[in-house]
Length: 117
Image 1 (cartoon, rainbow, N blue to C red):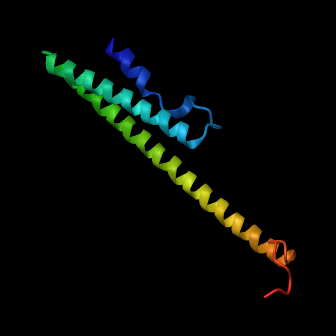
Image 2: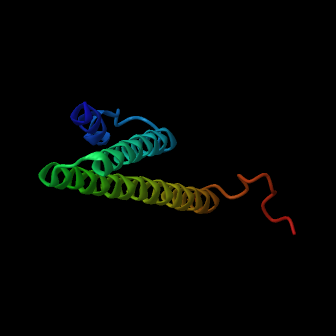
Image 3: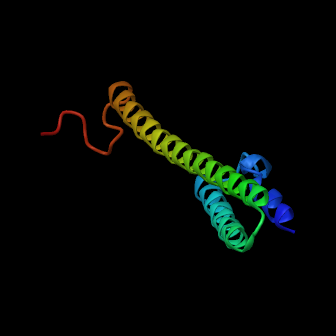
């Protein structure tokens, strides 16, 4: 039973659509983290109840693997957020360049009269 829970939680963002917006992708990754944390809690309970030392070692390793998966997902979230910030900076810069080029190539296009003070 626990293996099924762990297996379902181990997949990362590979199944998500690449065209999803950043916020929905981040929300999906955060939900995945929440599920993994729940799995970790269940495994930790099982560790406490497990009398067999070898079985406890296996369960501990499962927890470690899930924690590593959570760290990888957190890195994905950070990268998505960095990418989104960079896209916004690029949009701002492109807008500035367009405005600068527009003013140079089309004087007076901003609604002011040429030669007015």
